[in-house]
Length: 354
Image (cartoon, rainbow, N blue to C red; front, side, top):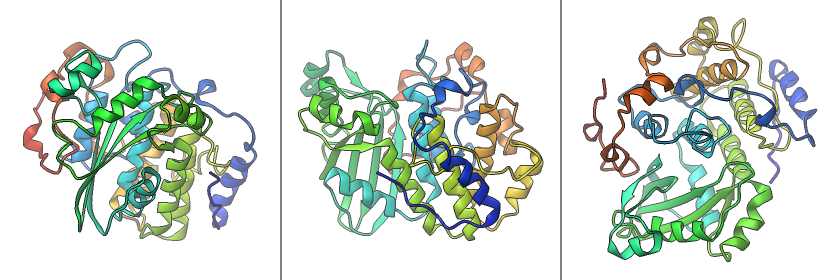
């Protein structure tokens, strides 16, 4: 689905023209970027406010998982484990929830006035006897669970996710059946399952699952996020820059949002990922979530280009490296089973690892 174009001020128009020149070409992450990240904040643009924020712990579930090896794991940018939070977490930018209504329209649901939304990744849960027979083991790991509340009550969407180029198969249909029938989810009245794949694998995924589940594509996710930037309480050029960074993010993984932006916008400093750039961003007239996203975007771009970015926020300097996490193995099975997608979650459910 093509994304709409924008009316941008001159400072940003050059970046858009550069991005448009890539339209029709296969610009993919396989030809650029690091093979492995050093720290988690080199890979997520939509940075949490701090280490006590719900988003921090939702992301920590993924980047602190030492059990994923080889091509798997958050620190491997070609993996599903990396791409999923790197791109989906952009929804944290938006204080209104109009984007959820668009997704609900795809999965066949609806909502009234949405009061709050929460989501989490790799939501491991122990299966009861009813479900164990379908999976041959006693636990399952939904890729994303999105939980919301409106004037009608609560609702949930469970996503089975594939990286760009990957397709769903029959096993994924059984997984989705379980995501919406877990001991923790079956009491929710409105429950929906959905496949999240790229455009070119949508038909194949539908056929493989006998059209049992709707498909949301990564291309559509990017377009929904770009559309949501229209409503950000910021000047036009900040909204345009944010949208351009979203396009750049997706293009890193070979997901072309209609050629809107293969190239990054200009840095707010002398180069990407520097203190002077972050200081300039901090003084912008924009919500905190947008400032953190712009700082995070510069940081990720620097890492992607092979530079060592400075820390966008002071607290990030103290975060563990990928090497430390593999050595310490802090995350336990109990940590992986905390229900971070639920409104009942609080920081008291999390352990302090240091």
